[in-house]
Length: 219
Image (cartoon, rainbow, N blue to C red; front, side):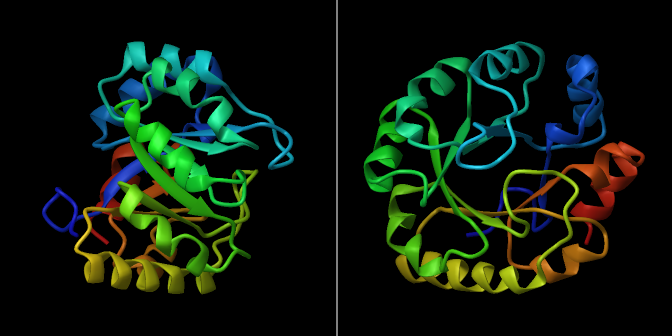
């Protein structure tokens, strides 16, 4: 599976690094700079130690951008909140394999609501735990930092999961995009060839948006 962007990476800026007092302005700025998606990190303070935003903020974002909303649920028992995030306007809704007793059922729940399901895993979780779930997904997310906080250093050893995912996706002839999130910048991007979508927070929002996005797309 190759992405629809002529071989270039799709770029999903993570609003965790944006100016939360001016999110509408930030979304318009990244759209003008060439962003393809908006990555939204949802944390519950339980599955990960940090606490961020919920469905009401996603609903507000939906009103001020036409970009797809790529919502990453770092929450326990995500099945309890799927309907809320679907109603809020998520385009992709990604769950952690470790966060629910029945990830397959949760992925089916997401798809039944007309939203694209995604699966992800912590760096310490073997990639084999998500491979059987790929036929239920539109997106497979590789975390190259420990989930929960922005600004962490890239974990190069996690790039091996991209290779394993790509091999299984091609073997099963699936239409599943591979996304990478964590410590992505113009230097670390060389480790994630084979992915389709790159999530970047600090690298985009702490630099010139357009220059940073183009540097990643052209890597």
